[in-house]
Length: 293
Length: 291
Image (cartoon, rainbow over all chains, first blue to last red; front, side, top):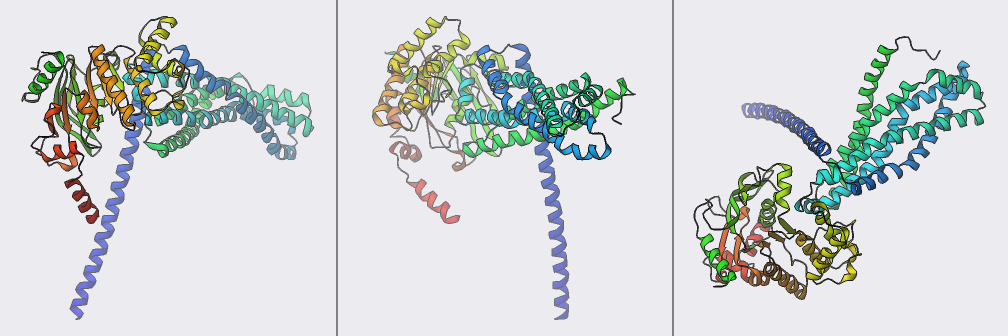
C-alpha cells in the first residue's frame, strides 16, 4: 500500500513537471508565433509602402483623385485642429502658471508654452487629430471597398488600386500635415498668449519678448519635420489596414480602430526617436543655446 | 455548322484532351495545374482547363468549391500557390503590375454584388474604365455610356442615380454595362443571377447571350443556377469542394456539354443538377452528431 502510494506520488510529481514543461514550451511557441506574426506584419507593411512609392514616382495621380483627398485631409481637418490647438495653448498656460509664479518667472511662460507647442504638442496634436479623423475614415472607407469587392473591381478594370486609392491619400497626408501643424501651433500660441495676458494678467511685452528670445525657426522646423513622418505613417498604416480588412462589418470596424491605435502608437514612438535625433542636431549646431533660467 | 455548335463540339474536344500542353486550337485561357491555398485552407488543387476563344464556359459547383477563386485567378486578382494561368500566351502570375494592368483591360468582370463604386453615379461608374484608359471627349464618353446602358435595358433617367438607389437587378445590369464599356475580349461573370427574381434572372441570361452574339467574346460564367447553365453554356465544368474529396480524386467532376449533365455517371453531378441534398444531408447529420 505504502509502495503504491509512493509510486502514485512520484507519478504525480512527474506529471506535474511534464505539464509545467509543456506549459513553458507552449508559451515559448506562442511567443515565437507572435514574433513571427509581428515580423511578417512589418514586412507586409514595408512591401505595401514600397509598391505604393513605385506608383508615386512613376505615374502622376489624377487631379480628380487628388483634390477630394486634399479637401478631406486638409480643409475638413482645419477647424478641429485649430480648436484643439487653441485650447491646448490655454491649458498649458493654466497648468504652468502656478509653478512659474512660485519662482517669479511667470513672464517666461510664453517661452515654455511656445516651445512645447512648436516642438511637441503642435505636431503630435495635429497628427493625433489626423489619425482619429482621417486615418480611421480612410481605413473604414477602403475596408468597405475591399469587403464589397470595389477594390477588386478597380483592379479588374485595369486601374491599380495602390495608384488610384493610396497615392492620393498618401500625398494629402504628407503635404497637408505641415499646414495643419502650423495651424495647431499658431492657434496654441494665440490661445496661450490670450489666456496668460487677459486672464492671468502677465505683462504682454515681457511675455512676447521671452517668447521671441527662446523660440526660433529651428523649433518650428522640428515640429514641421516631425509632422512629415507622422503624416506618412498615418497614411500608410491606415490605407494598409483598409486594404487588408477582414470580411464583414466587424472587419471594417476592426480596421478603423486598428488604423487609429497603430498610427497613434507609431506617432508617439517616432516622436521620441525624432525628438532625440533633432535635439542632437540642435546641440551640434548651437552648443551654447540660451537657457530658460 | 453554326458557330455555337462548333464551340460546343470544341468543348467535347477540350474535355477529352488529356494533356496540359497548349494543343487545343484557339486556346485563349489556359489554366495549368492550378493550386490555390489561403493559409492552411486549400481551395483549388491541380485544376487544368483550356478555354478556346469565343466559348462560353459555365463553372458550377457547391458553395466553397473554389469557383470564384478560379474566376479571380484568371484575371490575376488572386495569385496561384502553384500552377499558372496563360492568357493569350502571357503567364498572368509572371506579369509585373503594369503589364498585368494592360492585360486586365481585355477582360470585363461582372461581380456577384455588382461592386459598383458607391461614391459615384451610375454614369460615372460606367464611364470609369473609359476615362482611365481611353482618350475620348466628354461627349463621346457620354454617348458610349448611354449606349451601354441602353444595351442592358436601363432607362436614361438612371444615369444620375447612385448605386444605393437601384434595385439588385438594376445594379447587376449597371455592372454588366461597366464591364462592357471597354469592349472586352473576355467576360467573366461571378454569379450574375444570384439573388434575383426569375424574370430578372432570365433578363440577365438573355443579356449574356446577346453580349456574345453582339461581340466576339469568350465568357466564363460562375453560377449555381441550372437555368442559366442550360441557356448560356457551350461547356460546363463542375468543381467539387476539396474537403469532401480524397487526395487522389480530381477536383473537376464534370467537363462537357450541358446536355450530358443529367445522365453523367457520377452521382454527385446528377444530384447537383437535380438540386437534391441526398448523401450530403446524411453527411451533415453525421457531422452534427459527431460535434
